[in-house]
Length: 275
Image: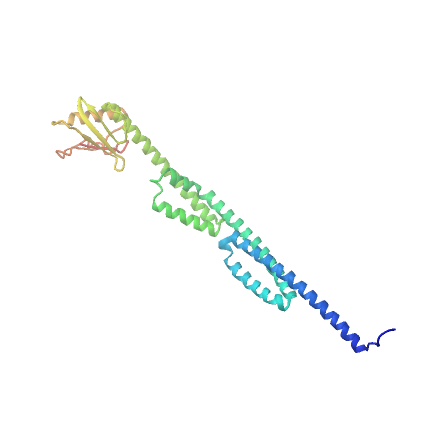
């Protein structure tokens, strides 16, 4: 026997009930899926922030706001939450690509700047006396200009011209250092001393003498401990230095104020001598 026949209304009610149950089941499945995707997005954001640090501040703030909205929608409308998470993941992927490209550009710029300015880095390390404040400021201006536009031909030409100027200064500096070294060696041979720094002790015509060379002023100071005239000793030194290829400049005798050798307004090594 069959039971009482169901009315159309009852049949519709039962069908709607089954559909409600099915929709609720699907909604809960979407909630679970959305919750899982939100957690994955949070982990991705955490890795993004850890990897990019200072480049990630704005992105972190913005994505956290979107994730909070997705969590709210997760219980109300998980479908919207899932779409939000997909958008968040796409945004993070694009930002990752953008930052990667930005870092590549920055690296390229840094490499180009280094190519144009490595000469000055070497100059600073090898010739610190030539790398004064004025040079440092100009190099910094070059770096700043290149960072704005690495293809600025005007800046590149200015750098090349300044390099030529500094190369000339290096050549002049090395020439002066070579001459100074030769002067020291020659003086040491004349007085029978070992060249040791800028000070040496020996004898001239049997008289003890201490000689100090002042690099900054190109002056040569001679100290004679013995009392008496030093003019003969100075003349001996002058003549022997001339034999070595150097004409000493004007010589001032400090004790008397007398000026010797004044006829040598020009002298090859730019060194002066005083007693």
